[in-house]
Amino acid sequence: MSNNREKTIIRTSIISIIANIVLAGFKAFVGLLSNSIAIISDAVNNTSDALSSIITIAGTKLAGKAPNKKHPYGYGRIEYITSSIISGIVLYAGITSLVESVKKIIHPEAADYSTITLIILISGIVVKFILGIFVKKKGKDVNSDSLVASGSDAFNDAILSISVLISAVIYMIFKISLEAYVGAVLSVFIIKSGLELVKESVDNILGVRIESDLANNIKMEIIKEPDVQGAFDLILNNYGPDKYLGSVHIEVSDTLTVAEVDKISRKITKSIMEKYGVILHTIGVYSVNTQDEETAKIQKDVHDIVFSHNGILQMHGFYLDEAEKIISFDIIIDFSIKNREELYKTIYDEIQQKFAGYKVNITLDVDISD
Image (cartoon, rainbow, N blue to C red):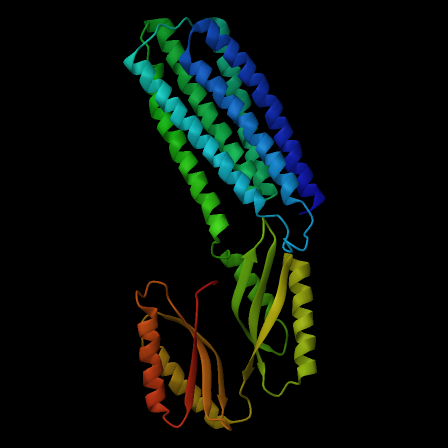
């Protein structure tokens, strides 16, 4: 993790902490004076936001720890854990607000709003909207799920405060109390937002598909090498935001020497690291037949058999070892196919039957990247 990224996250979180503590203090004071459970709940919500920012700072500091023998890939994934905690806080705030709103519906109490109440609420809404835009933008700039989650939470708070403001104005003019009902409805939206944040955090922890643009750009960069005929099986493991380690297979001519392939691999590793910050710790090699015209015919026949079946996304790494009588290649079957193993076996049997004099080796790859 770069020092600039860490400084940005910490600086943004400190600003958020100060803003939320000030808002919480004012709202708690006004809420107690006006006997408004909605404003008091809003103050509690601001306090939870300040806590979220403190958790973000702690998570960022821990995630920035240097790798060691026990954790050689570093501590970057801690950020995903902290974003999960913040998501939980958003959920808690939404559920708490819903519970208090329902209580107020069942046992209504008269509130005592004033002009000062409205001023505090309007000021809080403006601050929260500005804070939400600022924090979310910074989060996206530095790819911090925790900051993005905090920014989203700030927007939710602003919306909740708007409902309280509208309810206060209606009560002051018409003496009709709607704050509990409006609060209940908006609490549901906050809970929904919290669930979405939880899902996003869990997805990052479990591991998600590589972004299509990143995968395609890396492969295009690899095949710029004159001797590389194809790039396949790109695997990138995420060890924190923007920290990828992975591997890839390349197709090269069977006439290249080991020294030549090694030179190509080193050039690819260097260029991908410099352009995309991705560490390719392994580059596997598929040897491509170039010295036997009969091989091209066999490859076409195999290709036709494979793609005669629905659900085949790719076939690559074909190699015919005429001396050992072995046909080898990889296939990728779409996840939409319910029984991929059964389709694999069908393809294997058809090819083995057509080329009975050969041993057939088919590797069933997983559709990991585009």
